[in-house]
Structure formats: C-alpha cells, structure tokens
Image 1 (tube, rainbow, N blue to C red):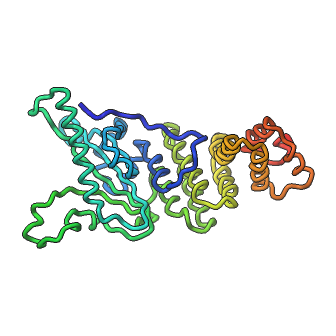
Image 2: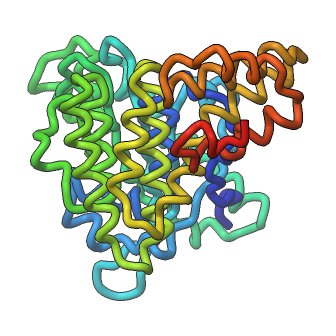
Amino acid sequence: MNPPTNPAHPPGNDEPPIREFADRGTLWLLESPENLRGLLRLVAADLADRLDFSRATRINRSFVPDDLHKQEADLLYRVPFHEGGAPREVLVYVLLEHQSRPDRTMSLRLLSYMVQLWEAQRRAWQDAGTPVGQWRLHPIVPIVFYTGKRRWSAASLGLETLMELPPTLLTRFLPRHDTLFLSLRDTPPGALTGSAVAHALRTLQAADEPREALATILQEAVRYLEALPPSAQAEWRRAMRYLLLLIRHKRAPDERQALYQLVHDSVEHRHATEVNEMALTDAQVLMARGHREGRQEGQREVVRALLESRFGPLDAATSAMVDNLTPAQVNEVVRRFANAQTLADLGL
C-alpha cells in the first residue's frame, strides 16, 4: 500500500503574489513530471534515463508531521525505475533551499524526512495486514536544489559534518546515502539548456542581472520553447507561465511591461493571445485587491497605472475619463488591456 496521491494543480491567473519566488515559483515549475526529469538530468542523467516520468505519481505530504512539512519547500514523486527485470518504484524527493546562509543541518533534515517516509510505508503495511516478509521499502533519491547566492558545496551534506569524531575509527558507523545537489549559483550557464526547465532556470539565474542581459536570456528561453513539438504544449505552457511570473516577481514595476512585450513579440502568432492572457495577471491581481478594499477610486488608480506603464503620461482628457469610469467600465478596460495597442483600443 502506498501513501495517498495528489495531482499537481497549476496556479490560476488570480493567485496571490508569490513571496519566495525562487522557492515557491520553482516548486510549481517542477510539479510537472517532465520538468522534474529535466532537473534530474542536470545532476544525474544516467539515473534520469532509467526513471519513467511518464508514469510518475505525485505524493501527498499530508501524512508527514506538521512540524516537519511546514518548514519545507519540497516535492515528492513515486516513479518507476527500469534496470533489468520488472520495474521497481523509487521515491524522488526534491528539497528547494533559498536561505541566505547554507543550512549546516541539511544532512540531518534529509535523514529525518527519509525515515518519516519509510515509517509511513510501514504503518500502511501494518494497517493493511501485509505480512512482514512482503515489506519492501522504496529507495529514496534525494535532491537538494539550492537557489541562494552564497557558495554551498555538496561536500557539506554528509552527516559527519555535524559530528566530532576520529576520521577513521568511527565514520563507518554513520548512516550514509548519496544526495544529489544542484546549486543554481554555481551551475555554468552553458549547462542550462536542452530542456524547458533548464532554460527556465537559466532565466532565474539571471533574474537580478541588468534588464538588457535578462532580455537576451528571456529571448533564448522563448526561442527554445517555441521550437517544442505540439506534443509538448503542456511543458510550453508551464515554462512560459513561469517566465512571466518571474518578470512579475523579480523585476521592478517600471521594467515589467517592456519585458512582457519582449516575450509577446518573441512568440509565434498562434501563441500571442495566450501569452497576453498570462501577462494580464498583474492587472487581475491589482483589480482583485481593489475589489477587496472596496474602493472604486483605488480601482481607477490601478487603471491609471496600467495605462501609464504602456502609453506614458496621460493627457488631461484621458485622465478625466479615467476619473469617471464606472466599475463596469473599469472591468472592460482591464479585459481589453492585454491586446490594446492604442488608447482607442480600450474603448475610452
């Protein structure tokens, strides 16, 4: 008997802003099994090739104690593994870290979590009355993905780094397991290519660079996504949404519209409308905030900010029209905003 499952659910266009984008946004990106396979290929290509991510199953973490899962940004999948004979199931566990200082207790955290997973299997077998002789624990492949700025080495992930002991006499008594480690800071940009998730992570790597540098990397990412076959449209959609979310959460408000426009201009015509709808998130979030606060004036100010971000300072006549918009007209302006090339397109 296995732990309960939970299908991935991508956020809609009305989700609240992501406070820890490097962790939470990337976690959402990796909820796609194909993107998870792309991540694994960056650190263990031979292993990734033997895991059947087309049959991967997301594991619900509700069975993990609250004091453990509340502190983590992580992801867990059960995946068939092929290496001669019948496929075996393994657990692939990704822990995302974006702390300003690398966590010296990471090895202990990982070991504790792995034991919790095996304990959950044991409890399930006991509840089902499975004979002990049939119990077979799932191997766990742990991956630590570090998106922080400080240098962090995989060598610090061993449990021995937390102990004071003679290096030769007692180390053989320590629990040992391999931990795959990926530091976004230290990954060569040239290695982040060949998959949608790799290009998305290359863009995250450059998220704080000058706008011109980020624009170049965005264009490279969009160019790769646009070359994906029709069968990979789900992958295209998630990665494209991630790029637009990155612009929204990692760049200053006065830069966003130009970067949105760059993405829009880089996609094929058949994708233009969908990209516009994705980029409209800013307007929808701001409008939802205005509705919650119950201030019609605030909604008009949102419209004013949107118009000025795209068309520059408003003349007196347009400004007066904005001041007199009804709630229904405000909603109509926001609806038309994504495809508007001129003020006249907004119906003012």
